[in-house]
Amino acid sequence: MAERHSCHSMGWKVGSQPLVVDFQAGCLVEDAGLLAVRELDVSLGVLADLAGRLPDPRSPKYVEHTLESLLVQQVYQILAGYPDGNDADRCRDDALFQILQGVPPDPERPLASTSTLNRYLHGYTRRDAQLPREDRPSLLQQRRAQIRRLKAANEFLVDLFVRTRTEAPAHLVIDLDATDDPVHGRQPLSGYHGYYRQHQYLPLLVFEGNSGFPLACWLRPGTMHGACGVVDVLRQLVERLRRVWPAVEIRVRADNGLAVPAMFDYCEEANLGYALGYASNPVLARASEHWLGEVQLVHRFYGHRDPHMRRYEQVADYQAGTWPHPRRVVVKVEVTPQGSQRRYVVTNLPEPAEQLYRDFYVQRGDVPEGPIGELKNGLSADRLSSCGFCANAFKMLVAVTAYALVVLYRQACAAVGGVGDADIQTLRGRLWKVPAEVVRRSGVVRVSLPGEWEYRQLWEQSLQAVRRHAERLNQVGEPPGPAQAS
Image 1 (cartoon, rainbow, N blue to C red):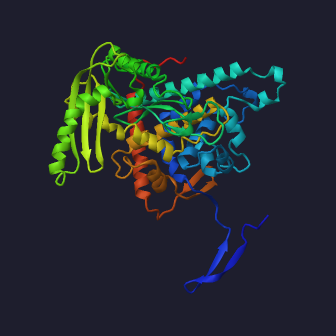
Image 2: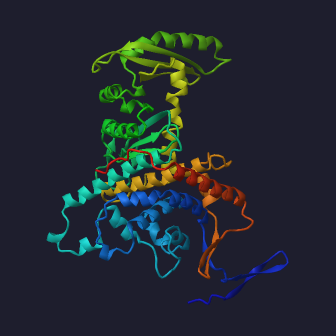
Image 3: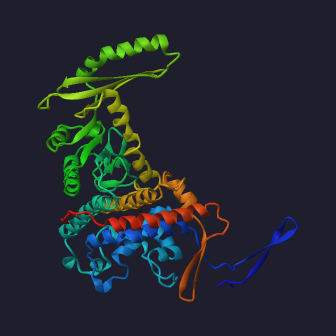
């Protein structure tokens, strides 16, 4: 082993001074800014709550890493930018990740390994693998535990949203979207999708439109219709939210992939306002043809002054063959130098056509498309490489839970400039990815950040904001009507 105090003189100078390299620095970490996120997490009991809801098939006699510690390790690896399972082999000896779990940093007591984390994703234990085949849990038992875990994690998301509101909302927006998740192997239930032209999964993601908070995440086979299961997911969310806030107004927003008859029927039955994108067809094309012609004529004469022209109209009595009655369709007609297009939205909301389209429906660009982009680009939630479908589904839910912590962190820091509206990559680059020295001395674990750090003041402001926000939420307390675990 190399001596700790060995010293090397380099072959060039820094200005007129010689350059010397030694190994006298203490224990260094590089993601110390995540301590502020963990402060919020611990104060609100976020991951502790989730861990308490999940079934754990392991025998307590053989447990070295608690269920909560596995979740903390996975979530904070994702937040730090280490989303893959084999990243655990790097992070398990990191003093910061040990501190995040509340254990003293000790290289002789590493965190969970890659194999341990992967076994939990599959609902499998080392003890199960060592049993004779006839004594191992049946596939049905294992699958039942995996599905219970997915249901519990989805119930946790909506419950976390409810208990982190400082006051009862007057109205909520439920944004639903199906997104493509390409695979790069032979993951179970993935398949080739003709529209996306790739082998993929097709997860369903649900967010609250005003806050961007994730409410549900269900991984689905790659060739499934975008609307499969959407009514059941929406019904569960609406029932839970109305148990807590009976008078809340709920609106639903989605694109044309989810605009199926069952969706319209349920929204009207449950007294939900909705605005759902709708695909073009010959009937709607004929009904809007004269509006397109008028806009094209005006554009031909005045397009040099206004190259982008839009017009908003409505078809009040459109009825598809599978609908029990006519519904209102808002039409956007647009002509640009690149061409023309018509977009349709089916709605039961009373707003004028332009207001409904511009001020409500197209806000889908912020939510859910913004959060989905952050999940993919900031947290790598679409890196699903496990060889089990339920394992991949739970791995995506862990990433969505990490995103829920990000949303809560940004809400806590709403008044801190440059934090409350920053995306994940900006937060990671400015506030989370910061080197520090860990010193354990006189019964105290000290994390020393650079005194000349550019974002020191911003980080300290965010820490204070997190503490005030957590104190305010804890004073509000748990709302009535908790969901019952299935």
